[in-house]
Length: 258
Ligand code: SF4
Image (tube, rainbow, N blue to C red; front, top):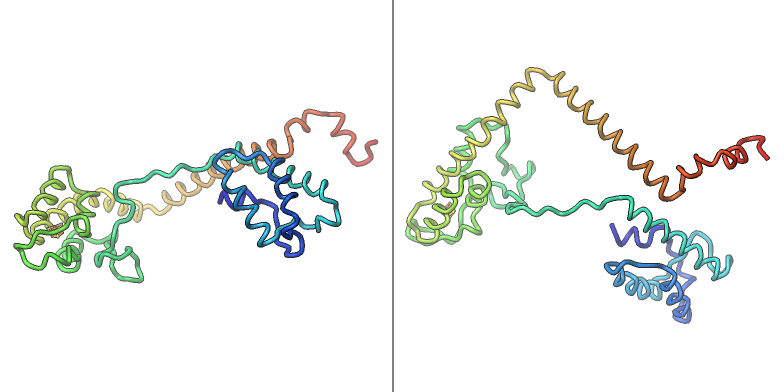
């Protein structure tokens, strides 16, 4: 995303940058103010440009290099203005970034390895006990296991209380518990967690209009937020608020104005 935006407005044209244009590229770098985290991009841009030339819509030779560099500067200035207006979402890591499917692979409908939010408790327990894989190296009850590679333990971490997680972790490593015991404890906690979700789901199924109302209200909020964001963007790029406050400019630009 950043890489794309850093070169926003550039188009590929193989004719432009040859090795002897390196000097101009260095000049280009000087007029583009880059924050520290993008400095390395400038270096890679220079390398990329020499091997894989880039240009704006028109050929630089047609518009002259000084105009070309000016245009680059303006476009980059716009990019950094945008960057200061739009907030990049932060990455929030969790302890369980990915919940595996019953077979340990990514949970997917096409793999048939999912536990559905709509599955009744008996179905959940059957899926866990009969189909959820465990540590493949724990072949016998007396073999110590590795909870970190076991999908059952991944579910424990998300749905079980701390003491149960510690019990499963320690019991698995020391082979003091069996997998069936461990799975049953996890299924108990998963069912407990899913119960209120299923109750609400049934309520909504009985009142579909409520769902549409929630979706409509959410869409209204999103529309308002998008409008506010676009206003900030237009103002940063085109100074639209300032222009709006200049009645003489508005009159001058109006049809028939002088
Ligand atoms: S004891 Fe629990 S965590 Fe260990 S392998 Fe068996 S199911 Fe997995």
